[in-house]
Image (cartoon, rainbow, N blue to C red; front, side, top):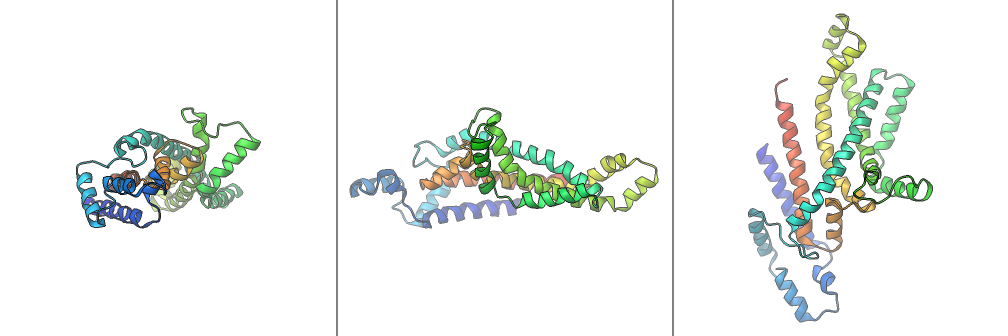
Length: 293
């Protein structure tokens, strides 16, 4: 487990480092402009170590990374660790909010759809979940902006620091996750309800509510835990779009701005942090699932 996690982190770090050096765009041009004097461009390129061979750049980056140094932002002039420390609480707040929204909506919907799967309500829930899972954040986010800025101005579009400003980005990110959780809950509960121990519990005279909540849901919660943990990592990726659309000052917005400005250290640092969180959640989930029941 630890070896796989280390290989994943190293692979992502190396891939991001190489890809950033291949994509078009020169940070020197963005910082000084294309009309800058050649001497100024050469001096800045040397200062940023962009004049070194790619292998030496990688060695220097690995040495700094080994000491916990993510480098300096090329455009903001601040340590990347400081920028990440300032923005990651905003992203975690948004991610936890979207995760809570998705679970509060998806789990009851999935249980209801599984308990009486042939009823019209269950079929409607299943159809809505299929539709919602196909709604990408980059489409739903702007749609919410248009709807609540032109037609229903009840909620602020961009109001970081207020609870009202948290609602729309939470919905934009959480709807798709709620659909996946609903589908997973439905499938897990249906499977458990057809198990032998459920038939035994019913034969003992337990009420349907007790059978469902005392016996079925604890067993069905294991796949839900896995899905919730894995989807939380995807929430961090979806936050890049949502934070940009709703001007939320989080890690995703920082990564997007850095990518547009070819700020190599900031992009590398944000991707590394997201990777560490995602891998850490996977390890934690595996440890929880491996515990004896």
